[in-house]
Amino acid sequence: MIKDYLRIATASLKRRGLRTLLTTTGVFIGIAAIVALISLGQGLRAAVNEQFASVGFDKIIIQGASANFGPPGQDAAGTVSEDDLKIVKRTPGVSRAAGRILQSARIESRDELEVLFVASVPEESDARKLVIDANNIKLAKGRMLSAGERGAVIAGNDLWQGSTFEKPLQLGNKILINGKKFKIVGLLEKIGAGRDNSLMINEKDARELFNKSKEYSAIFAETTRGASPSKVADKVMRALRRERGQKEGFEDFTVQTSEELIASINTVLGVIQAVFVGIALISLLVGGIGIMNTMYTSVLERQKDIGIMKSIGARRADIIALFVLESGFLGLAGGIVGSALGTGLAKLAEILGQNVIGGAIRAHISAELIAFALAFGFSVGMISGILPARDASKLAPVEALRK
Image 1 (cartoon, helix red, strand yellow):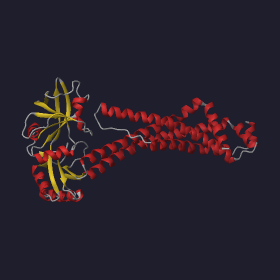
Image 2: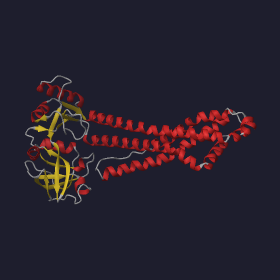
Image 3: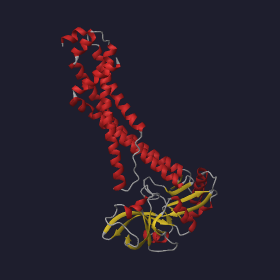
Image 4: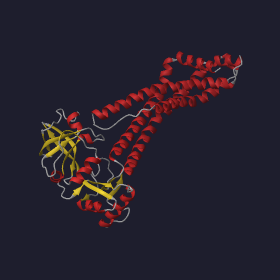
């Protein structure tokens, strides 16, 4: 019986090939958007977790309060300073801490101009090691900045291997940062998360370049072995609040552990993803209505066939099963095309993200996601076919044969 249903349903869809294609358009557009968005969202989450796993979950980030997204401390409403860094270092549970200046700057190289982020490297050896370890910084060529060295810069991977500049930066090149001359002494291996498109200079150069006498964009701290990062972060928060004379809830700075930062980033990604998936569901709704309309048309065209089936013993349940299965196949066809299209779009976004904007965008396309997309498309089709199938099953054999 099931084989008969399948044979009749597929034969009907093949006879109306163009109508089948047009009917599934709304479904496969919606499925494609869902597959692309979910795979990219999962890929971004995986990239974030991977970056923090390489850094370690024993880190704490202190920065000025800000509603903006981007590198820590960029365009923050409040500020952190050298005095704050001293307080953080004295806090029980903190093994070492370092302040960094992160600022966008005009980079000129051989008649090319780009606006990129420049990050400072501490002069103190212990703080310098923390920054290098926490950011997984590794040299591919050249050397690291020496303490007290002026006018030297290290370039991120995309600046010497990518397409940021038409003429990639090389060791020994002279570049201008906000009009001041710097010499490239080191080239970095790939780090990811957008940091490959930035430059590093010593702290004294950064203070002079960006006119920051004592301010930092952010302070990074590492907790002692065995200490709870969340408890240490709470101690840092209380110490800074007390020093600034601020009440709880009215701070102009934030203190976050690595885990809290991951959670907040994943929450933002989840909200953005949910909004776009919701928009894609509208396309699926339109596709479902299209399937319903097609099935109603099919019922009208096949009334005589329905009458014949009923006259030779077909039950209402058989008619319902036949039309619901046929509409399900319409949804499944949309799911197959949509999954393929969504996979292609996700891979295209991955390539564009890596080659154009230098971001760590990776599409995570799993078998479970594809299976979900196919099942979802099939379900949308079946649900859309219930009402037309019910109407078809109610046709009286005699009346249907007269059509």
